[in-house]
Structure formats: structure tokens, C-alpha cells
Image (cartoon, rainbow, N blue to C red; front, side, top):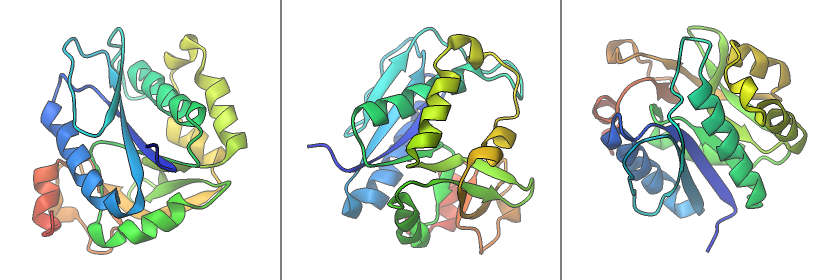
Amino acid sequence: MQNEGIVFCTSYMEKDPDRYSQWAKYYQKCFLPYGVDLLMIDDGSENEFEIPNVETISLCPHLGRQSTFVMPGWKRSFFHGLDYAIKKNYKYISHIESDLWIRPERINKFIEFFKKENAFLTGDCRTFHIPETAIMVLNNKKTNDLLLSKYKNPISWNESSFFEQYIDKIRDGKLFSGDRYEGNIKRIRKSDDYIAQINISEASILFNSL
């Protein structure tokens, strides 16, 4: 039976299957009381991967990322994830990347944002002062239509663009704050609502309940 809400992430499972299974395991546990479905969009892995209780869609061929601002694989996956959620008539939609972890004690706060109607919200990246597009609530129909229109043409996937800058112009507001740590857990603040760009084993050190 389909739930009211869905959270999706982009992926390339062949590169690091454990990364995605851990993401699924963590958020299944976090969202179990709230009835949230999970979806992964795979960027052209040659082998098939199945993760229990997670819908997976594989897109071919593998497009990957060419540079910092040219990321056709991610844009295609994001477009298909959002398009899938809308076509399935989910009431609440969120995108959470596979290396972003909401602190367990902040899950209730996230759910409040997640169930905010007609809202397009992102995290707030403290170091770079940009929208954290690795965590978004996508409940604004007008903005979703704009995103789908922008990325339905495959030509747009190869455009060089500062995605966060574009999102800053169209978002309705902020979810909560955190940062991108690139594996440097010594910099992590206790006040962070989420931490990004670290793996689950590093997150587990901080989230004793994992």
C-alpha cells in the first residue's frame, strides 16, 4: 500500500552498493513511524541491485558527472525521481542525498517541514552560504512544474550550471541548518540539524543510536 509521502535519492549503486543500503536502512528506521516510502534512482549501473522495501529505478546509460557544474547523471536522476513521485500522486515529496544524515533527534522537526503543503524548502549550508540541495522538500506544484519543464529535455542535463544558485531563486524558504564536511568529522557542530558528505560509519560515531 502506498504511503502519503516519499523520499528519494540519486545513486550509482555499482560504485558503492553499501552506501545506498545503509542510507535505506537508516531512513527506513527514522521514517517507520511516519509512513514514508523510499525511492532510489540509479544512474546506469550495469548490474541490478535490490534493496528490501525500497523502490529502485535504473536509467541507462550511465551519464555520471563531467565536472563540478556539469552533472548529467544527477540531473537526469533528479528529474526522474521528482517525475515519478508526482505521477504516483504523492502528497509529500522530499529529496535526501545518500551522504546526508538528519540527526535522529531532528527527525520530528524534519517531518513537520516534510508535511508542509505548497512549500519548496531546502537545507541551509552554513560554510558556503548556499541552499543545501542535498535535502529538499518538494511540495510546491508550481515550482515542481518549473523543475520538470527545465529538465525534461536531455540537452539540459549537460548544461554547465550552478544548481544551488538557481534553486536559491525559486525556493520558498529553509528547512534547517547543517554543513558539508567531506569526511572531516572533527569540524561537525553539535548544533547541526543534518550533516552532509560523510559516510554512515562516520555518522554512526556521532549518532550513537544508529
